[in-house]
Length: 186
Ligand code: HEC
Image (cartoon, rainbow, N blue to C red; front, side, top):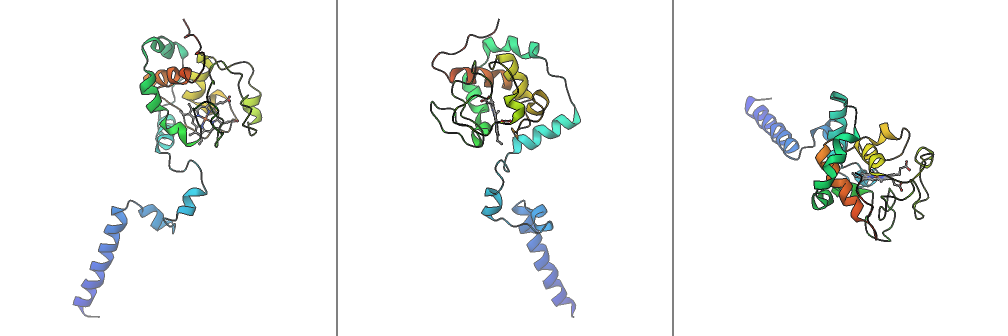
């Protein structure tokens, strides 16, 4: 093989690698995986960077959750910001009145409703069904901060909202999903 020919091949390989990096799928190429849509559809919740990021944070610095850190923020929290913080939840939940169940139950009227009691959602885990009473702000905060720690064995594949201000915004947004919103805790 003359060196000119070798250079041409090396150049082609480099170009291919650049394309691979450019599309950000080197790991897919290394693992032999494709870009296929079927691949993505087969795994609900696959494209949730929030989940992955928060999981990584948890692994590095586990911090015990205290409702007393979030409760006082509720009075000044923003339901509008909470609506934005709810974006990743929409992959699995509808929030409108009489919205259908997706991977998770519809969340209209969730605050103050009995845990695991959405009539249109037949797939609750035994872990969540084993929880007694209604969703209070305190229970909801702990659950959304770290679903797995708050209700071990529940099936919500979501790492949790670790930022207390975001969590407070999210709670006051969930509160608005109601015909008669629950009073804020004192
Ligand atoms: C990957 C899908 C997924 C994502 C993302 C997700 N959830 Fe869930 N959620 C579920 C599933 C599934 C359940 C039922 C869990 C069980 O039965 O163990 C659930 C349950 C719940 C419940 C309890 C419902 C009830 O009727 O008692 C609440 C509240 C909730 N999710 C809120 C949220 C919020 C808020 C977010 C975003 C911050 C979120 N979820 C993100 C799948 C998801």
